[in-house]
Image (cartoon, rainbow, N blue to C red; front, side, top):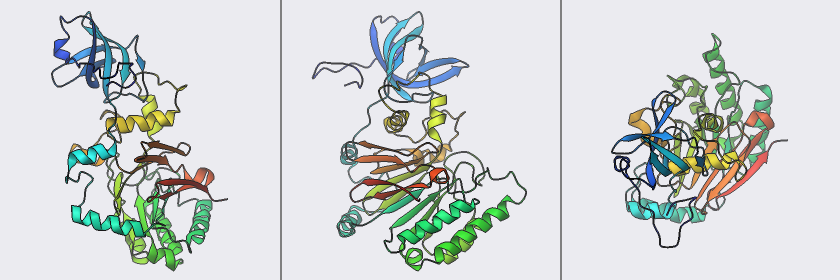
Length: 373
């Protein structure tokens, strides 16, 4: 069945390959990727060939469809062009169906055997108060941010969360604009380490996960980003034994829960490169964004010219099977989106703007939007 298209029950629409379009008149449905093989001209490409794509009369279903996205196109092949009437993304697959299809194959990553997961499931039932506190754009160079972080830690000193996830950018201006940026940022992390160590319950009872932002130090802007250089982590690891400096994106297994964390300003980027205007009357732009990522089973379905990705590590960007939660840390306002009660997506918002953060409870999949007054 095709999403966004009316059809009778038990009726399925045949997919036509691009090489079969020539000499085959009438309405056709073609599944392929939107590419731009010539400047300013889009093509629809499948495993067989690519055909010019005419979007002059096309409308889009839900989603922010960009070059590099897979789509199902409804249209007709006329005068050497596939004249599309409607473009929709492929339907995402519910998590339980994907997991059942994979059997014992673990595509999330790690070395957990089925027996390990059974034991973790039993442990998870006993840890009903687990909580993951997530913050984005933690600008350590701003005094008011450090002050609010101290208030945050004071508030959680007695109710110890399982984990704090702190995401960049860790400075309010891009790293590298000043000659002493490296030493300043190291000082900020050292100050944060001293602050956390002043709360023994958190220092020894919670894990602190640090995810770099797009403007933080690193070898390049190619995804996935490596962890912050060791020079910034030295004192933190000494003072806070359970601190982890990881990649962007990163994957967290909380007992049996699979959580993906990604820090990137995706909404503006995807909106800017849409091939068709999304229908903003039917859904919020954030809903279009999340649906696109889940439809494409990828965290960044943009062409390499816009957001390059290391081909060898592209698997780190994939969302198949759907995880239990996807934390999309964007600079836009906070949002939450749930699919089939099996995958929850949310954005903690930008911490410096209004000191917003999110407390996520994995056992119940509850998202609590919070703010430090």
